[in-house]
Image: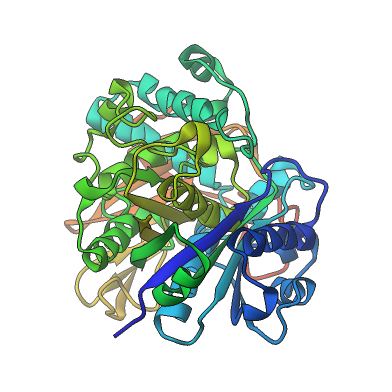
Length: 385
Length: 120
């Protein structure tokens, strides 16, 4: 019998180009999260730090130890969680396990990454190092996987190129309502369609930016949550799965198997299905990924997610808003922070603190993807107000 | 140099090869895909490439049929004049990207030679 796990606090720094380095970014989010929940440092028993590559980006390793010291959490157990771009989601899984198992009564999760001091080419190479050597030697990048998959999707399902542009337009519009998002700028379909080609048929506005930032969440058992908060969220389902390391070995390149498998696990644990999800944060590192995840999560029939974008069904006033925060596309994608920030947005939506982008929601889902769907965590949260 | 794929006990084939197949089976045969032609499943031209990689860089996923079993490979192409359905064959190239310019050491475990796809 496992403990029911609650989220009683959260925080997120401003995403974008920041002067702060990784230690300061992590400390800022961690401190703000403890303040948000009104929990003292000495109450924290476990600390998880989601981070993909602080060693490669900045030459700083051992970030979990540094953060535990900087926040006065000693002697709390601390661990760094790396699952590439899905490090944040993997951190949620680890934090949930630590509380659900009874090992910890107060677990702090902080995700962060410092990237913008590197050139785009250097950042791309660090991220591309996750690929198999047989892929790496060809200069394969994550954006090129997106281009390959987008061409196949548009061709196979007769989807208009405009549908991908509409994902970018929607997420930029949502980002203008999120003061912590990297981009605070609306764009038009025409601007998206005329922006420079990056990985044909995808263009500049189909891609998320390089970002610095951090985010944090605080987890505890349900009975402890009631000591600290009236409004909080409950982790009702969580699932994790792994797909092939070599992307072209997947049977159907337009199906994200890791999303299918992880969401089935999360839905089963929560005792709900896709129709019960009111709002979702998906890993739109590239616009095409929003379609692929919607289909893998059961939000749309195979080959039909693009119609939802064309019909405006994923907008804030649509029947199931997707990426109200602006998503990775507009909010930014500081690798290790992204999965935590996705869940932070869902937490804010469920406790009614999402401000101008608030949507009616009792149940929210966050899907965090590493690589090009290589590692995936899906988490479902329910409001307790 | 060969473009070596593995066939496993269950009959499946993968490129590149792995110590075990998707079903956990051990490899039973090595197959050189450079002796086959295949068909382009999808392709892209990347204009933002990492250090040491040609720019632009056209890549394709190609499906080969080996004795009735499909196997896919991803590689650079020799031209940007490819479409979905184009028939291609692998051609050997000594250096696919400049060794040691990016994150990986020139003399480390990363191989730098291999095959590009050329339309037939």
